[in-house]
Image (cartoon, rainbow, N blue to C red):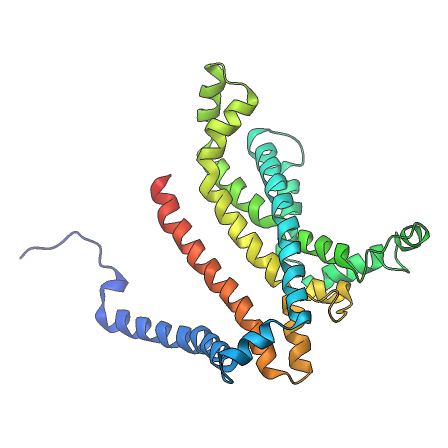
Length: 278
């Protein structure tokens, strides 16, 4: 009698494996797939011409532009901040290092609504900086600057978190070797550090962009939801729905759903090919 020393895995049991696979697939279809299909079918329910007409409404186009503008500002800031924070945290030892990591990741655990209210009490008319800003003719709340500020807050951890994890695992041997061969700081960063972290950086940027373009809670508090002025795309969807413009709301929702699907595909590509390519 031959006794196999191969450990028996639970997942190899068909009576456990296939029910779990079927259950997971059905739940994914009902919870994720069906709503996405509903969004697109409802958006095109009156035909392609009606869909394009809803998309091309001035207020919807304004919300798309504001969403893109916010992302275009938030992403570069997060890239620079994430690179600097990851470099400092992973390449230097200093008191409060772990506390700094906790502060960077704090937006992960704070409700966006709370963030919006906090900024309102900081920069609003009755807030800490409100009277000073008003005296100098500067408006932050209920304007584009407020949307950008809260979007920066909620997206801060994404790039930094990915880079910190990667650079901690990778270590600094390659950089030390480059320095020993005479490379200066800029050369070391461009030729050694950046190529080594490029996939983690791209992964963080993808997640950051998705969050910036889809943020609702914090933006809804500080933007004032002014029609055609301070509505981002998520807020425009809510406005159209409240106006009983169902097709318009679903048409705008397809843009957000498309961003989400593109994000998932990009995330999958980075996870699959990024790890294989180093």
